[in-house]
Image (cartoon, rainbow, N blue to C red; front, side, top):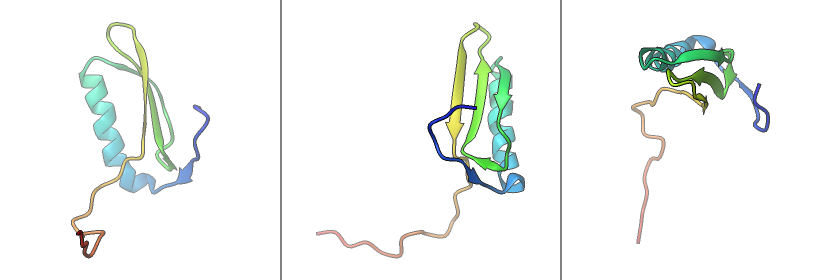
Length: 77
């Protein structure tokens, strides 16, 4: 695993559709998935190889945005 960042527990069931979206997009783009971390840990890590042989990675804290505003009001000026 990639070091240097803190891992947190996460709901695997809630994150699975988001993770599947990322993995499917990479595979449809011709990438080979080399590593994917457990969905119950945040951030999620994907290591992949492009069709051209370049190895890359993604570290993402995937979550669904809610419709409820997180900031009740702001005053500027």
